[in-house]
Length: 276
Image (tube, rainbow, N blue to C red):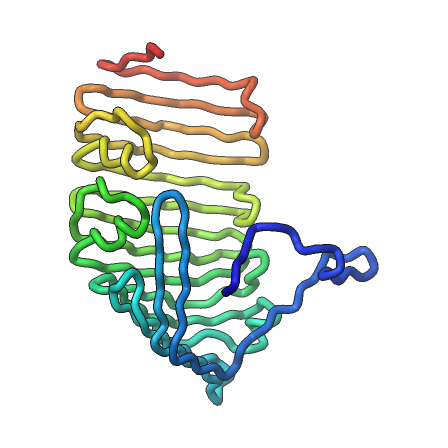
């Protein structure tokens, strides 16, 4: 039985040289076969139990690792098949390639592309797709049993132009729709960020269920606008929101984030109540 906790490594397990940052050396399994195994995860919202009935990892002639997993997760069959590597990229964290197909019940997943530098998340060129005719399996696993079921579709393209990362993504769940178009200069620090977004759905109550917020009304909603961060300046621009008969237009800015003592905001609309 293995247990992992989010704790720093002891000093004896670190290697430092000439004042450089600590370096860890990953272990890469090149040829693996597992015929039976069990993994369990539990928190306040959900329990996950995975049984591995077959795990195969083999190094091919091109240096990529060919991966073939199958088993069940919470008693529903899953498969993972594809390739990633080459081995030098897994060890050094540079020029990583991946091409993975997966399924969990009726949920289908595709992830493919490359990353120039895994440590800094620089130079990504990735495509992610998720499809499912029903979302109940995934919603229950995420601890969201109250959220309404429906067909699921997720498409995301992550690319780069120089040091800037671009993320274009869209998602739909039944009548819930989300679209994001972002440009990020520093992905690790989430700095130099410009995000345009659109979000709409048949019931604001579903968002309350997703984020464990009680008392949210069951009314249709829509939101759109632009969010940004430039150093310590964080803000919303030309943002609008509607929920039932309530209409809001918001422009807001924090000039010294993460400090929130000094801020400005312009809010106007109709049908809303700001009382606490």
